[in-house]
Structures are given as C-alpha cells and as structure tokens.
Length: 156
Image (cartoon, rainbow, N blue to C red; front, side, top):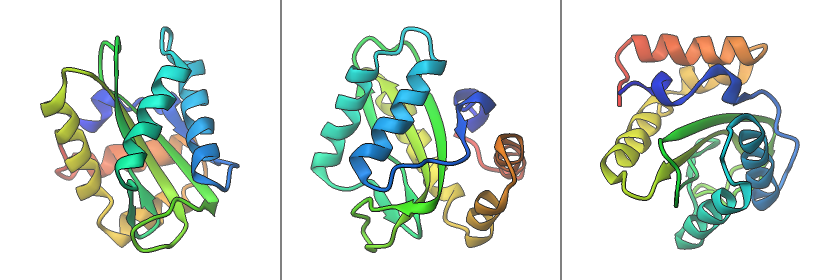
C-alpha cells in the first residue's frame, strides 16, 4: 500500500481556518465527509475526538496525525490539511500545528492503520518536506509534493 492509495488530491485542504483543536478537527472531518459518499461525519468526528482523549496526536514540529477507527467504514481514508495560522492542538512540544494528516480506518484494520501512521510520521520528520508543504501554492502542488516524497521511498 502507498500513501497515495489512501490519500487522493481532492482530500487535500489548503487552508484550515479554525484555530482550536476541536474546531479544526470538525472542519477537516466535515470537508472530508462532503467529499466521501457514505462517510458519517458525526461518527468519524466522535472516533477522532475519542482518540484525542487518550493523548494528543500533535506529535511536534507543527504536525498532527489525528486518527480513529470508524464503525462501518469500508477502507482507510486519509485527508491532509494545512493551517497557515496554526492550530492550538495541545501538541507535545506546545507549538501550533500547521500540518494535519487525518486518518480514518475501519474497526478491523489495525495493521493497515498502524502502517499508515508510521509512514506519515516518517515522511513528516524532515524539516525540508514540512517546509515544502507549507510553501506549496495550492492543492495540486501539495499533492504533487506528497507523491514525489513517496516516490523517493516512503511506502505504507
């Protein structure tokens, strides 16, 4: 599985407007639900917020990888969102989050879910790549940067 198997260009959000964690997650899940037939926004948001109660998914360096398992979901769905202003995500390093990779997975997909988390975390470790995502001009440029990084060796 490759990241681009679960992230499509339409699921790239260029400018998240919300500044607080819950509002940003609501915004991202809401946009994803509009683009994903059959995705129940309330169920997906509940799964993400329940996971956040266990501890923040703001992993530092301006990155968050919120994720949750959603009953009735048929496949893993990934959405990317960028916030130029930053989101107060209660991150481990207390810095605002600018880059969000949101993962929704079926209840029975532990292995694939963990592989997606690991690959995204690995990809976002590099400051150069994070800067590329922040400076990209639009959805197509962001998606192209992800495809290119993946081509250089990041697979799920």
